[in-house]
Length: 184
Image (cartoon, rainbow, N blue to C red; front, side):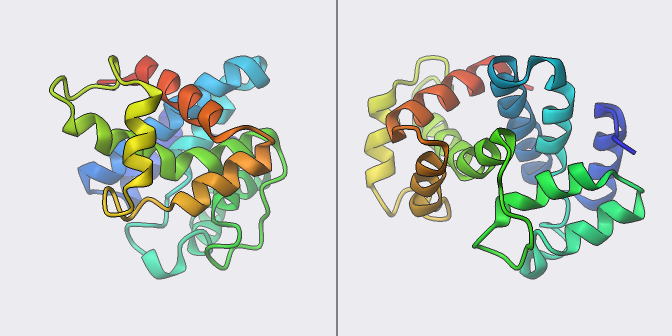
């Protein structure tokens, strides 16, 4: 089964209770939908579902992230393509067997950590918003290893490289993506 957004939301909420994780799933879902408009317009909802479910196992099984998710999603009879795409963002970081190969998977890998960094930077702004955020603001926070220390700069850089994008392009596009979904 390829779940609808509503079905994906229901699955997500069975395994995630913390508001932070639910909000992160919505942000990543919206970011993937934004990129789908450019790279795979006819599959926007599919991309959004992948974003919504990407951390399905993190809250319950943080030590088995991107591994336990395979079993969870199989229990809901979720299509193997969704399982691969959602779990591939842990490639080289967790015990997942799935490598990001599709453009969507590469974007998920590159933006997952970056959305956290941008979100943290937005909270520090007087506006508390990404609407007036500029690349230079994020780059300044990116260089400060103590700021949002849980967001791996190495993963973000590796993700940009894997896409064949300059880091600045990745950051700019992710800011634009987050502007489209702020407040969701």
